[in-house]
Image (cartoon, rainbow, N blue to C red; front, top):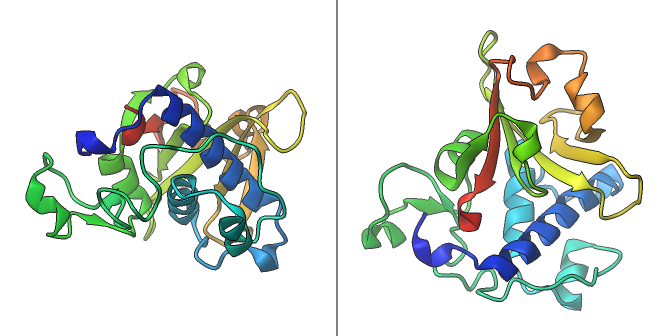
Length: 214
């Protein structure tokens, strides 16, 4: 990611709060009112990332169908789609940044889970204790690869929408189950061991962080 996209400390904190709020808010919506674009795990990440960088005013909240506009600080460095990359926020291929990348398709509005993992995030750890709210958990189905083997979850930390004292993840299943929110205890003890975020699970790629937060 180009250095000019990276956020300073205050903007990083604002981004994390908005990113978590927007992702978790989708879980509480009626499934029929969910934005049509949110149809798999990567789509949830792209939606929450993009809208976290927008100008958060009443018109924006109405466009997104949000019932309330939370009192959270804005990201001040730029406001989507008026960014140095315009609306094409996501890198879609590897390599060091070159000025020509701004016009040659290296960045796009769409990126799948694999592209988000490889070129838009950086590895933090396979130890969940190092995860910060707003970080990402990535998995890869190894024994039973599918058409979309990469899967992502958002580590929410504590809920911003309901006090519970618990920590959560939220993700889209990519299927008819839609959005799910689990406590970390539920995820670590998940019935299917390939989805447990523990070091002994070879399908768990680890905790990742958006490059703009590097």
